[in-house]
Amino acid sequence: MIPDISLTLPSGGSRLLLHCCCAPCAGAVVECMVRSGIRPTLFFSNSNIVPREEYELRKAELVRYAAEFSLETVDDDYDHEDWLKQVRGLEREPERGARCAVCFRYRLLRAARYAAAHGFDTLATTLATSRWKDLSQVNEALRYACETAGDGRVAAWDRDWRKGGLQQRRSEVIREQGFYNQTYCGCEFRNSPIRSNQV
Image 1: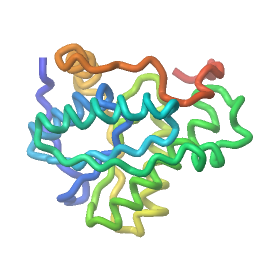
Image 2 (image 1 turned 90 degrees about the vertical axis):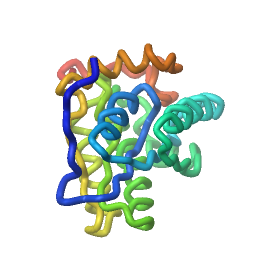
Image 3 (image 1 turned 30 degrees about the horizontal axis):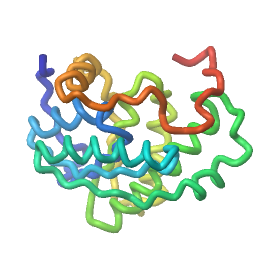
């Protein structure tokens, strides 16, 4: 069942850049936005993903889904070597630990820079839909990116995209679309243990 949610951009925004980690995480959110009259541009910026073939597969699924709504997609430069430099020394950090926080900042800073340079006034991310992610880390990184790289012109839309039936709808969209549904975030260091005090 499609959730009966009506969305409006925060702070009187009119142009939304939606950072997308993958089609499964984007599915219900994009559907809900379009039903509310919001037409986001989907920004695929995920240099954490390895191998490159995995990156291309996830990107292709997102592009396919965006085409159903005639939405624009932007493929950011893939630079895994630069991403590795950013997380150097954090390889053994647990999932939802310091490495993840750095990774989120890295990807969302790139998104915020693009948003500011191309006239977008609002930035959101589908990282906030995954139950495997620490929502407070994601939202902190989103706000940091907008404050730092958005040059005061890009608002962070740090809504909890898991509520209002969107988590359940996420699973339904995955099945309906037959999405390739990956079992890991993309990071080669993903097998570090999850912090026991975070869910």
